[in-house]
Length: 400
Image (cartoon, rainbow, N blue to C red; front, side):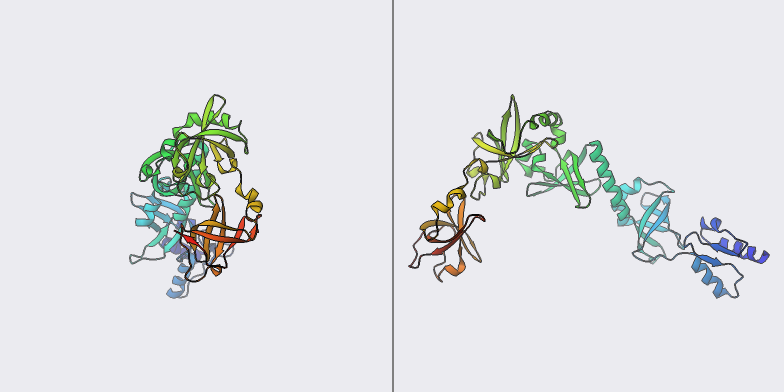
């Protein structure tokens, strides 16, 4: 028994602290359990130096690149995080890995248990390099959810204009999200270019980690009082309701419409695709500031203060009479509005276009966008809003 205790004492001294203090002798079977590997280790006297070294390797885990381990924070400095992962040396988080997780590391204290990724089991200095990006990511998403829950005002920087709004970033975290146009005050929404590379206060209104989706609202800060009042007004509106309004702003993606509800005014958006039955490239080609229009309410969200309108739905649908006006066999003139690899799109009247398939176009008679061309209705599918066109059998007339 005395020789066993001496062997335990000698082995314990060779282990990196604090694990040397955790080796427990069970005198009944002369075995210990490693606190790192949880494996039973034979403590009978070694017959050779090789056997003794082999036993030491069994007691200490050897991390592999790509492993995800739990460790204890042992030191935090200005440019380095040291983590005890039960290996022959402590692991460290330095340089780029440290910078990318700086905010997360600031939240840690010595003694905290964290998850780490083994970036390199051993560099040229014999150090184990670790990454805490995954753990930092978890922390960041939880922080974003907390900010949304508490309504914290945060600074975001506009990065680039995208369809329907502005891509923005929380500089302090390097986290990117999106500011829909509907979540910008009307003054800012009219000129999105002014927000690129500009920092402005916002609130988080949606966090969806599964979809990697983060939504900001500038309006929730700049129009906080108005939004609360607006919620009560919006509760009085219903989807499908027809109402008159005034064009209060024009952008490339649509038009802002101001409507009156009782003695209060609220503003909503008509997307460019909802302005007319035909395709509109620029809203200012068909609408003017201050113009009175009739709209249909397509969306009402009191909580976010959002209203969606449609001008085209307030107009008669040209396809309602298409069977009467454009029966198969009828010959008429149309305007080529688009040329594609499969043929030409020909507009017969605003909101009603058909396809002149490439197989119907004689070689050398190919029309161009903007040409007026004589066609014949070959087939009609009102349910799918499709018209198949053909050219006259005789030489077609093309006007330029």
